[in-house]
Length: 108
Image (cartoon, rainbow, N blue to C red; front, side):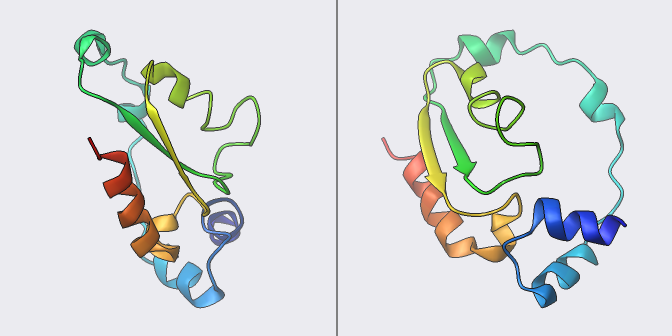
């Protein structure tokens, strides 16, 4: 079941070999860091420019109202939106394009 979830919800743009290889790299992740509240006051007060990289085929969260963008990105205030085609795991399926988008997100 978990292997199918990985393939269909996180890395659906990969070929079977890449999906299988990357699934084998996964390790358990503790839940507590996602449950702990953080004090982000200084983050929101920062004047450092922010960017949001949005992989347009990322369905790890359901698209629409509960999706990554704009629900998550809107919390940044003013930000540069940088989009690219790809799944949640675009770092495995198109690392060169992701690297270029990271550079684009950081441009002055």
